[in-house]
Length: 382
Image (cartoon, rainbow, N blue to C red; front, side):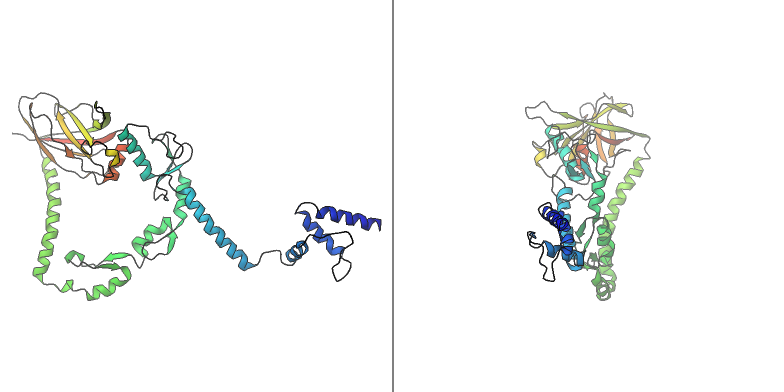
């Protein structure tokens, strides 16, 4: 009896202890039952629900499959939402689509917002800072976060056409090549068919399309418009090839450096160091939005440039010139040929727009420490 009482004391002590001790009571309680009714020893109080939990655990150690699956689905949904909020850009609050940069404190920025912050700081003559912690950011201080880029690429997102979910890494291929609801155009678009619709309706439309049966006269009108556009492109390239036949041709890499005007409200402008081409000294200048007062408040940004002759000349210089991207730059510039007759009285050209594609390319140039381009000058012999 003494040993039995000692055991009872041990059971009571375990029941009043931690939750882990509850399993001990359940295990010991099975050996201390007085009869089929399940009445325990006198003086031992069981916690309500403890025996039931222990017995159900002994009977089925794993949770029911349906309940477990439901729990995992709920957890994964919450996890995706949490990942969206953790991995999103701190500026636009959207998931990055390409490169991801981080400040020295680890705050994330998508490539577009990062470049935009640097460009804004250049226009305001300020040091760019992280919008979260206000630490300094620059291309040298910030680095890419490859782990976040890979994690974002595996997050699911909806196809804009069929609304099915795909990992972000495979979404572009699905939307461009595989989706049956993607918007496509008729193969007879080159002869004037305006139809566009979902890809799965394309075969039926092409069977019924009336454009293959158009008369030759109707087709000639369409082809003449296409020839006009092709002719303009051909004229540009033919002009460049003709310029390459000139006797005096000079080119050099130029570097635009940022400066500020001396006005009360300073404005950003760019200027190159003096350089020599065709035995003459030149300078290039550039300005943002044609010296608009607050270009940082404008969504659309452009750059325009002018060429200045710094040396004195005895006769006029009739020249063609054009700017192209530098050998180590990725900026997209469409070649445009400029023309000017230089003299001592007319030694600078009018400002001409730098032929970049859009404001995104302009922000890339503004965010860079310097703008590196290549200048060609073709002198016309008299």
